[in-house]
Structures are given as structure tokens and as C-alpha cells.
Length: 122
Image 1 (cartoon, rainbow, N blue to C red):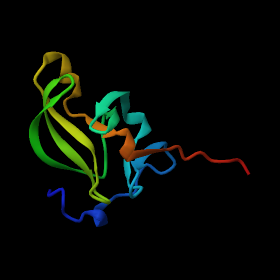
Image 2: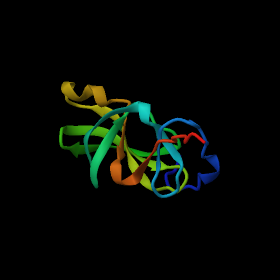
Image 3: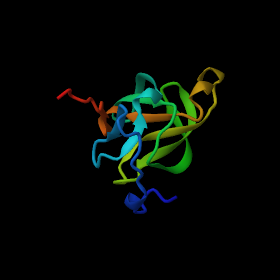
């Protein structure tokens, strides 16, 4: 899927009534808060969250990228609602100690909003 193509009509509305992370630009749902593994990661523009999974994202081209913990094969992740780059997907880690990242997403803190969906008693 081309990261520049218009995919806004393919955004799914999901995880209703669950705490989730949404895109800061267009409010598309990107992940359940329950999928959060760690807040102690670094993205391109500051802090990043390591996530088990993500929705409403499309991946760019795979590339080997030197990161703080070594070279990883990653693909940038783009919001399907607005095409903003929201993080990346870890395809492969070269270092054995980093293999736990494979198949996971890094979502940039500045690109997402925490939505709790609290209900107030009336």
C-alpha cells in the first residue's frame, strides 16, 4: 500500500468504550491502551510507545535504520486517516537482545492522543 495514497475511506471505527490511542491529527483510532508494552522508547521526535499492535496504519518501505539500540529493519507507519507518519513497525532486529521488538509498533508520543472514554454517572 502506498503511504501517500488516500486511504481515509478505509479507516475503521473500533474499540468503542475502551481506552485507546488516537491520531493527534485526525482522531482515527490507532491502538488500544491495553496493547502498550513500554513508554520508555525514543522516536524521531521525542518519546515513543512500544505497542503489541496497531490499527488504521499503513506501512511504508522496509529499510535498515540505525536506532539507539542498533540497526533494525523497520517500515514507517502512517495513519490511514490523514497520512501523517505516526511511528514505525519493527520487522527485524539484528541484535539478539532486541528480538522482542520484532512484529511490534513504535508510536510517537507527539503524534497520538490518549482517549480514556470515561463515563460520568448521571
